[in-house]
Image (cartoon, rainbow, N blue to C red):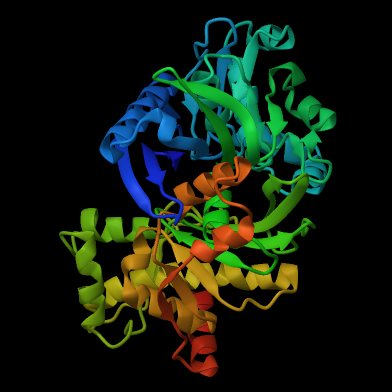
Length: 488
């Protein structure tokens, strides 16, 4: 028997089949269209998302040469915050999906802040009042589609993040649900009570009638028919929470960092949400066995994307894989810092108006110094987030578990360990987002006995030990802070 994970991301839909040891047996992937109708707007076609996800699901089963009856359960993980509103009767979306990156609703959030409501949202949701999250996106759709709010009040429309949309499709409209980790990203969910909140819905003018039922992150919430075979849907989690679970960060004090286009660092804080004093997010990690677990989260907007910029914008390298060798050709950054604030600065600064810069240039600066400084910027930004986390949680981290494409860069991983002063641990299976969804689903049906058995599957590929003195690391971080101050 196997577990199937549906990993619905921002630019592609993927399906992965895992065996009992947590190994990838088969994988299929399909990209879908990104729409940018106006500056700052990002949209997806929800029907194309479903078509791509359904296609790769069947392709992965075919590649694994297994029948639907060989699948013990399906787990779903998804791009978070992306907002879909559809007609319950026809299943047709009433507008394009508004993607998490979309900034069109910033004025709605600013108006709520100006009216003094930010502390209410922060206290109940653990989030900052920002266009990033789903609540203002739902309001925008209801404001701009004729008759939509009245139809929503009559119960004719459904809202969902991508997980809820996929479950609706997989069950042919029989089940409208989401899990607590995705609900906690909407600005409508009280993370302390674990329930939708009437006051927050009223502030955003979102009718309760359109919201999905909130279910556990691990537990059978529905069944789907695949070629006539019933398969339980047993796990749901937003992508970053799924990666936290897949990295076996099941206890308070364990943290992971995902190095993708941006970086997402999550620290498990156990059964108590930590109110951040350093502009991090407090979020639901998962709901299991009737208990909510929480995490602190910090987002770096530009990580791997700075390497893409060196390749496509500056044309310093032809392939992203060449960046490590170029950066290694010099002993240090030569006093150069790259601050990749192309879309502002994320946590802990949340400065939307900051812009990128290269500082410290001299006649002796080469493309290798810029390449090294760009890689180091990823580690410096992550170190800023981790410092804020440790202050908030009062927890000294023992190690940082890492995943994502950029973890293949050994120079970056070593420098990350050096500036943090703690070991950076890369696992053997780096498909941790899909793996987390598979584990949550498999636990729900007894495919794995308990979290201890899941954690036993986690194996180290390489452990990067800090090799830099703490005085030198502090001096490097201080120089980075001075560089960042120039773009604020």
